[in-house]
Image (cartoon, rainbow, N blue to C red; front, side):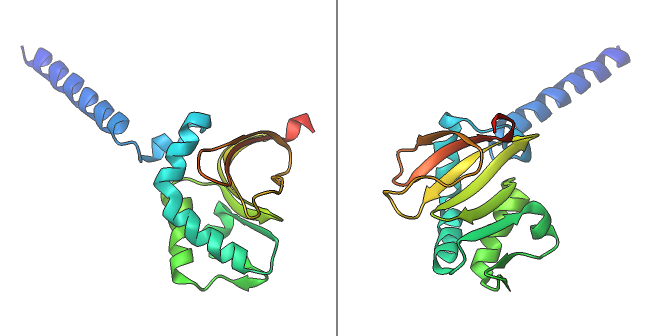
Length: 163
């Protein structure tokens, strides 16, 4: 009887834990999954306030080649145009993107500001924003880009193995 009670308690705890993990969409586990086209719009909707702060800051910068990754965030070495980022709102937005939301890289390449959400080996996926509407995306090793319903936003995939 006692053994059976322990087994039932264990199963209930496991089911409860599973429900919590699957029920909380903004959990870290959710962000480990590679995004797809369908998820891209959801990511945009959830992260758009942080994206807007970062985009405005990057566009105002004279630097057209910006690269910030999780390692530079952890070392507090985030720079734009050779200067450390001092804007507290932008720093908080970058912190949320890297530490909480699981982005891997955020950068600017010419006319494109990109938010890399997932990478494995030579492949990556994310969201990109075009600064000038009529221009092309400038993302290295781009193999797929799909416009989102939001103006100037794209879901993208890269694969360095194909180049």
